[in-house]
Image 1: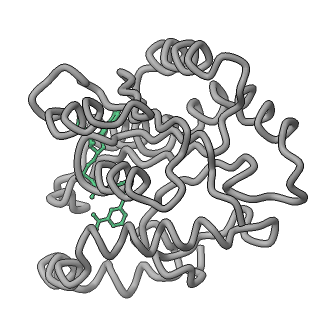
Image 2: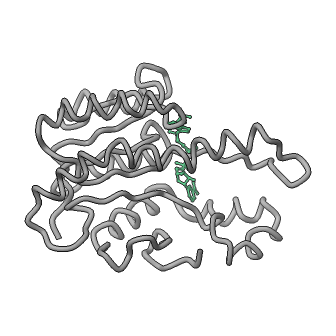
Amino acid sequence: MAAARTVLLTGSNRGIGLELVKQLLSSPRPPAWIFATCRDPEGTRAQELRDLASKHPNLVLVKLDVANPSAIRDAAKVVEGKLNGMGLNLLINNAGIYTPTATLETANAEDMLSTYKTNAVGPMLMAQAFLPLLKKAAQDSKEKGLSCSKAAIINISTILGSIKKTPDSFFKPVISYRCSKADLTVDTSVRGLLSVLTILSEKHSGTLLNWEGKAIPW
Ligand SMILES: NC(=O)c1ccc[n+]([C@@H]2O[C@H](COP(=O)([O-])OP(=O)(O)OC[C@H]3O[C@@H](n4cnc5c(N)ncnc54)[C@H](OP(=O)(O)O)[C@@H]3O)[C@@H](O)[C@H]2O)c1
């Protein structure tokens, strides 16, 4: 399968997002454009991203807070201008927030709302704002069926979002969950994630997959 020529990621200044940028840049066929978005491209947290951009002309930093609808619309305009008539093949909704201390006793409305705004509403507004560019990529592609090299939206989720798996994660102490995650490095996780992207097609639409491409029940 061909590689995506134009890719946009959210939350790309650190963690999995930054590693995705690095591995996409060093892939055998790097995208023609990688739009690495983050909340503060000028700030200290984006230094590594800026260093990469200074070495890779195909890497474009775009300011984007996914919890801010007008910032999403502004970013879509910037990306459209840069693409100059091309479409967007791949939108990766990676930005997310996680409050490890939130238990039933301590969770509050403010935390619930801000988490939903970033993790659930943000990806929906991103999909909406970038849909015209994704449609353009799909129309311009000669590929049949769905694929990440044609036009796709990938939402980075978590096994903690699986209702069926809730007993596995809910009753275990959080500490063991953290320790078990320590076995999987960001590098390994992103390598797996990028190889899963290459095999996705219609049959995967709407599914929840892990980093190895194995289905997780909703
Ligand atoms: N790490 C894991 O083991 C794991 C496991 C399963 C799923 N995931 C998922 O993978 C994704 C990335 O996780 P991670 O571990 O790389 O997290 P991370 O290291 O905490 O990084 C989160 C990224 O999201 C950005 N972000 C947060 N709120 C944002 C907003 N409103 N607008 C734009 N960007 C925002 C952060 O930017 P700032 O620097 O500005 O805060 C940062 O770049 C998340 O969706 C997470 O749920 C992670």
